[in-house]
Amino acid sequence: MKFAKSLFVRWFPVFGVVLLLIAGREWVDGRWDLPRLGFSALLFFFFAMFLNRWAAVWAALSLEALLYNISYVKFKATGEPLLGRDLLEVGQGMALTGYIDWDIIGFALGTVAAIVCGLWFRPKFNPKRIAPGLLLCGVVGVQFDSSGQFTAQSQALISKSFSTSYVFYNFRENVRQNGILGHLILSGETMHVPKSGEHDFYAEQLPAPVVAKDPDIVVVMCESCYTSADDKLETGMNQLKQAGFVATRTVSPVYGGGTADAEFEALTGLSSLALPGIDFQNFSSRYDEHSATLVSELKQAGYVTTGMHNYFGKFYRRAEVYPKFGFDHTRFVEQMVWDKSTGWPKDSAMYDVALAQYRAAPKQQKQFMFLVTVSTHGPFVADEQNATGLAQYRQRMDKAMNDLLAFNQQLDAAAKSRGREVIVVVFGDHKPALNEEFVSTGVLPANLFQKDHKGALEFKNHLTGEQQRMRGDVPLFVRASHAVAAEQVASNVAQKPLFCLPAALSRQTKATSPFFNAVAARCERNEDFYTTGLWWRNIFPEALYAERLFSS
Image (cartoon, one colour):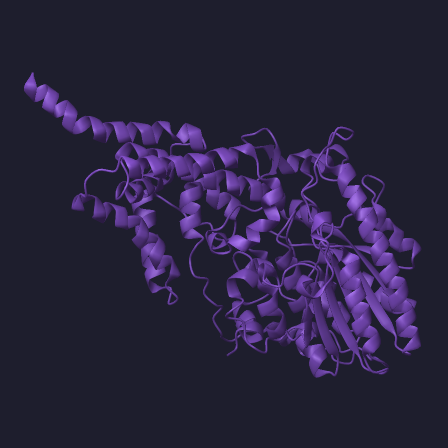
C-alpha cells in the first residue's frame, strides 16, 4: 500500500502536467499534433525553472493562447499572422491596438496571474529543472545567428524532433502546420541577405524612350484606399476621375496591412515576395547606404527627392530606410501638426508640409515626392446605425479624398507658377480588411475564404495565381500636365504588379536605366506574374537583389 502511494506521489505530477498540456490545447487552438505539443512542452519547461509546476502549465498555455489571439488580430487586420521578428518591434503593434478584444485581455491577465501565483508558491531551487528550461532559450537564441550556420542546424534538429516544416514563403501555412509557438520561433530567424552572383536579367530590355523634358513626379500611396472598378463598392476615390485623373488597376502584394511591402515595390521595382516578412523591418540596418532604387536614380539625375509619412518615422523603420533608398529629405508626423484627440493624423497636415517644400524649391528644380498617408487606417467598426464597418470606412475615405483633391489643386497651381510639368500618381497600398463586406458586395468571391475558429471569414492558405490577383487588386489614378503621359503610365501598370509602377515612372524621365527598362520589358509581356509556385524567382534572380540593395 505504501509502495502504491509512493508511486502515485512520484508520478502523478508528471502525468498530471502531461495531461494538462494535452487538454489545454483545446483552450489554445484545438489541435494536438506533435509540433504544437512539443513547443508547448518547451515553454512549460522554461516557466518551470522558476515557477510552481502547476502555475508553469497555466502560464505556458495562457501565453501560447495570448500569442495565438494576437496573431489572429494581426491576421484579421493584415491577412498575415504574427511573425517572430514582430516580437522585437513592439512599437509596430500600436497601430493594431484598436483591434484588441476580450480574448487578448483575458489571456494576458491569465499569463500575469499564473506567473504571480507561480512565484508566490515557487518550489525550492532544483538544478534538475535548469537544463530542460534552457532548451527553449537555446532554440530561440540560435535564430539570431547572423551566419546562418547554427540556425540551419537548429531548424534541422527541430524538424527531426518535432516534425516541423518551415514554410517560409507562406506564413499562414506555417502557422497551420507548426502551431503559433513553432511558427514564431522559426520565423524569428535572422534574415540573411541575398547572395550575389551572375544573372541575365538585363538580357531583355525595352528601348529607352525619348523624353523631351523631365517632369516633377508626386506619388501618393494612400492607406487602405479602395474603390471598385465597377459599381459594386464605390467610394469617394472615384472623385479623382472627375478631377482629371486616368483610372486603372494594379496588383498589391499585400492585403489589409503590410503597407511597407507595397512601398518596397513602388520604390525599388522588385517583388517584395522574394524576401520573407516585412522587408523594411527585416533589412533596414542591412540595406546598402546607396541602394539602387527609383529614388536614387532620380536623385542622380538631378531631382530633389522627398519622402513623407504622417505617422512616426520609426514605424516600419522608414526613418532608417528612406535615406538609404535615396531620399534627400524626409518628414514624419513629428514635424507635422497632429491633434491626437481626433484619432489618426490628418492627411492635410502632410500635404501642407509637402506643398511648402514644393513651392520653396528653385523654379526649374526637378522634384520627386513620395507621400504615404495614414488617415484611412483601420479598424473600421460597426455602430448602432451600421451593422458593418463599411460606413465608417466610407466616411474616412470621403475626408481623405477631400484633402487629396485640395492638395492636387494647389499642387497644380504651384507647378504652373514654377513653369514645371508634373505627373501625379495616387494608388491604394492594399485593400482594407473588410472581408465580409467584399464578399457581400461581390467584390471578392466567397471561394477565396474559409471560416476561422470564431466564425469570421479568413483567406484560404492556398490561393491560385488568379485568386492572388483578385486579392491584391487596388485602384491607381494618374494625372499629368500632358494627357498622353498619364495614359502611358496607366497603360504600363494596368492589371500588373505594383513593381511595374516605378519602371513606368522612370521611363517618363531622361533618367531611365537598364534596370527599369528590363523591368518594363517583363511588365509589358505580363505573362509570368502570379503563375504557379514561387513565380517571382523566375523573374527576379536573387543576385539582382544583392546587386541593387545589398552590394556593399
